[in-house]
Image (cartoon, rainbow, N blue to C red; front, side, top):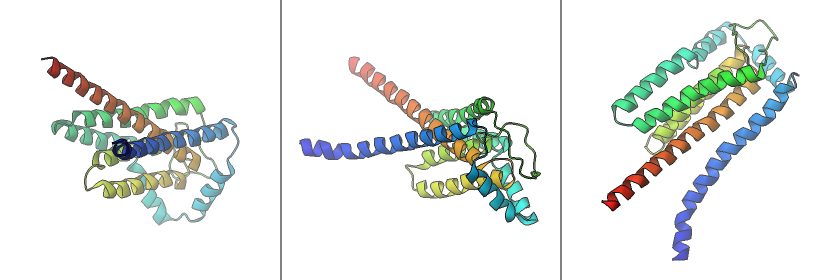
Length: 227
């Protein structure tokens, strides 16, 4: 009997271990990046990647990444998020709708707070194709796009579409992040920092709502038993 219980607990243990890794690794990475950003000195890897992308720039790539970057902009994220939330709510998935709302909306709010906290100036190695007024770290496009993509991946994780969602979501997030660096408006560390915080935040939202759901089920079960 003890052996059976131990075997049944393994999947849950693995899930907790995975969640721990997905939570703490991004926090550690973001902490390291934050230290570098606060030193106000250029990060060698950032400069090298920016210059590498600059060396392959051409009008065709400019047009492509200008289009791609709009898919991670505030307007697109708000519209896509609103459509997803509305569809979930109308189909009776209120908890999932709230999860997307808090995940995407919260990521935007956290991004504004962090930008004002770090006040990192945007790259100025060359005249960028587009101009951005806000501070650089972390990338708002990276945070918004990853929060949206992660929300969709989590929603579809228990369906046959999980791997398709994971692949498309990952490609979408990487393309948005790459577009920001290619266009010269973000350092790679801005993008990575945005991904890290977005992942942590989405996990916090999902875990918190799950706990409330389980607590509610427990209360309802207790009430039914007392009747």
